[in-house]
Image (cartoon, rainbow, N blue to C red):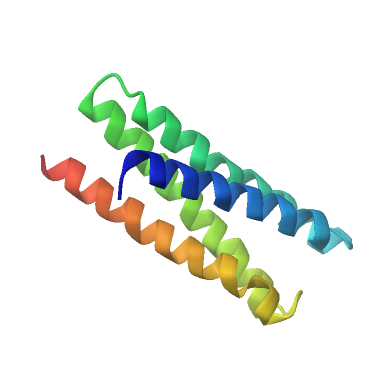
Length: 116
């Protein structure tokens, strides 16, 4: 996957998270979880952009690991929302799938970068 394609995909993921959270925040519990998801889901793309401008290989790996960390946290919150039945499973399915795919892509990138 090319850098711009991944950057766009992460940006789209952030936009989808924002849209979801705007509709989701109706109770105190949902606001709490939604705010956590909003923070992690929107920072993944920003961390990736930082990684693309890294000053060294070590800096790149570190920032990619931060991207992975935020994606994994987003995945956790999405799974919690699903498992707690806070929304119909169908309404979160696409976000869950995209989070899993992005975790796998970034995780592989981190492994590859460490091996070089």
